[in-house]
Amino acid sequence: VGTGAVPSTITATVNASIATNLSPGFYTGAVVVNIPGTQKVVNTVHVGLKVFSPNETPRLQVEPGGMAFKAIVGGSAPAAQPVTLVPEGAASLAWTATSTVASNSSVWLSASPTSGTTTAGTPSTVSISAKITGLAPGTYSGTVVFTPVATSGAAPVHLRVVLVVASGAGASGNLVAF
Image (cartoon, rainbow, N blue to C red; front, side, top):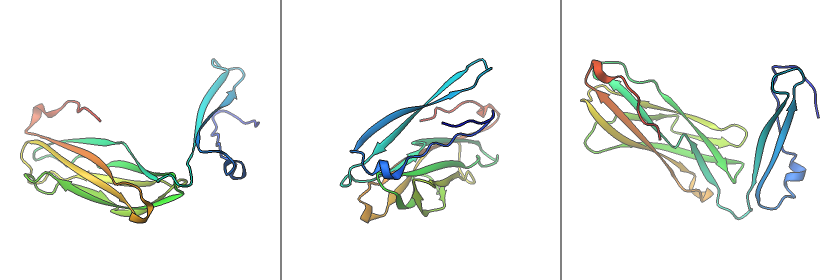
């Protein structure tokens, strides 16, 4: 229970001494915020907590699960896009990133940084970039593979990336995100 002024930030935490006594599973709850005198007096924020089994293999969560870039021949490279890495089932996971592209294209895809350690409290952010110099109009596909340290037992995660390079003025439009 707390009080405060609007606007404000509310931080919900898990009491470690209680969490260590929970059985593996998914727990849900709600934080109810009452703001008298507003159009919506009661606001409910639903929360979830996943408790992993000690012998469960950790996972590396990568968000988003895929991305697309678009550019015009002779134009600027598209802006880099962020990817967030979060460990699941472990307090932290060391990882490396490698970029690969289809064999019929030059190396246009990169990730930075290419290694790090992500923690539950401080997820890693990786910048994914597409370089268009020397590319002809067309659709290019690539993959960034995030590989957790082998001793974790966590499986690699593949991030699909698509680059569409258009020939000129009619190149505006939306790409389908996935």
